[in-house]
Length: 278
Ligand code: HPA
Image (spheres, rainbow, N blue to C red):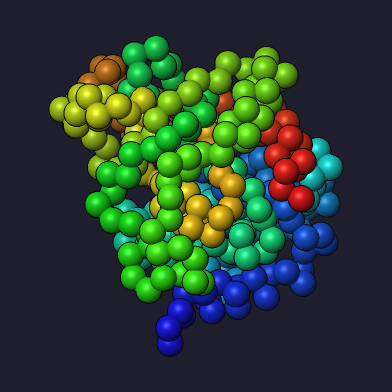
């Protein structure tokens, strides 16, 4: 079996597609505490991951585990309400399975979100940060192994985050009255949070925020020529930058507090992204 991964994604898409009311053009990946966006979709169809062949189940609190399709601002979307992470013990294939499924269902644009720790001195908890680039410090790459679907073996990541989608995100934030920070996201394996020394290292390396997701999906999507944009909700100041010990409950609670601003920006971002994703 030369490309079993592609066969599995195609089989999952074949089981999901007939249940959707419309073919999606924009895919959304909703991170920790941000999944509620999908509950408000017009014409909502919710498919539990358990009903999708080979779809991994997220085990982390705050990740619901549904594929939701519907309409946002007139644009047909499909959302992953919850994702799987490498630190849960999932394989790279599992971690990017949902993102590849969005592409296989017809999405030519995918917008991702996550919760992240703020490293840049001017960031505060509750801020939203548009990813302009990333550092893959997870120690692995989702493209390791057999080449997926005859895509490029060595995909270019010179502009992983699509310039037009970056411009649309800025416009969406401006129209929503929300301040949108920008910066470089460093992906760590986790699940332990970083040490203060690691955060100093990441800052020296050029990171503005740190998290444990998103980068594998972005790499897999770029290999499939999907246009990608991503926003982090800065849920906390990274280790050593505040006196507060870090914990997941606070991370989730802060993401939830940002969900109104996040939802307003995301709805407008989808509307603009829909003009290129069709
Ligand atoms: N570090 C890593 N991942 C995170 C953090 C953090 O501080 N906050 C939310 N996800």
